[in-house]
Amino acid sequence: MRQWVITDTHFLDTKLGVACSRPANFTERIIKGWKREVLPEDLIIHFGDIGNTDIIPSLPGCKVLVRGNHDKHSNNWYYIHGWDFVVESFSFIRSKKIVLISHKPQPDLGQFDYNIHGHFHNTDYVNKDPICAALLTAKHYLYALEYHGYCPLLLDTLLSKHFHLFC
Image (cartoon, rainbow, N blue to C red; front, side, top):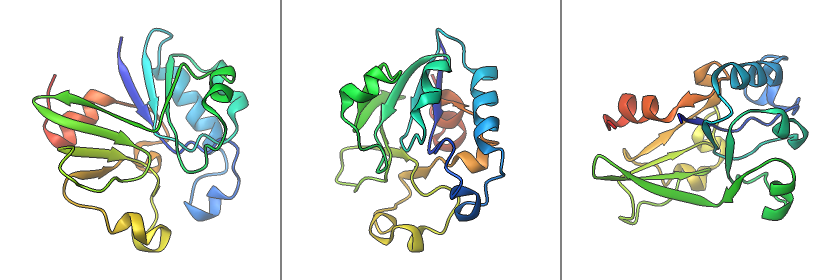
């Protein structure tokens, strides 16, 4: 089982074309990349802000939703709509470091070594959400779908490339 990450899909949200300079076919590109990369037995962790959830049941993998600021339904609603697990955030240990996964960056109160988050896309941090932007430290990493070809990314690739954490 491989572990994948994806974030801020905002499926079928046409406003993102302007706000984040996404191509008109971004939803199709995300779906195509997901179906090409993720196998049914793989785990895929979505860092929130799904968009149209009707697409989710047709996508492969065991799906974990880390709720984003646009994910307003109850956990049960998400389970009914194709998600296998729903959380606000979670952490795990890799190479003796605590990695926190969240939608928005979290304040560094000593509870993590690294915080991988979404939320900002490829936009200017300060103008998008200045309160969250003020939290950012060297421990934070913005995973933006726009910078990864609108495809899921292997979690191990992200951890080794950006934090030098190995399996």
